[in-house]
Length: 115
Image (cartoon, rainbow, N blue to C red; front, side, top):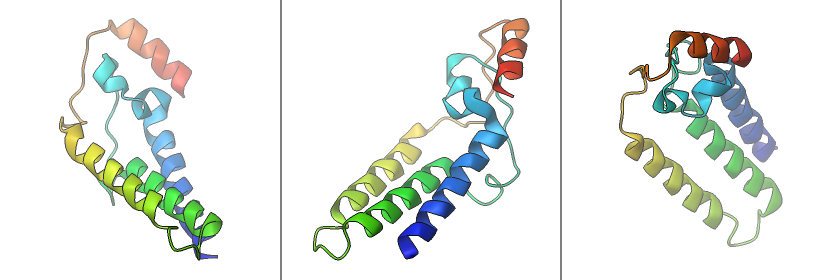
């Protein structure tokens, strides 16, 4: 039951990130030269890295369902938590910085495809 709740909470965060940023924004579009508007609404109003948190919650939920009560059930989720924490820390650049390496017409086309 707790594992299912963690997975549901994690997926709500992940879906919310896709809803707010679109597929271009979710997959580092700003770092690849696309304009990506930064959102301050849920889930970004509560968490700095909601997609990372959603992924980690889902991982913990999955292993809680699949491996608990085996004595090693927490090893892989703990390692994944470290990886995601380091990723969030090392991401470094302010995600609100907008790159404009592509012409506006290309950006506009991509945003209409992402919606």
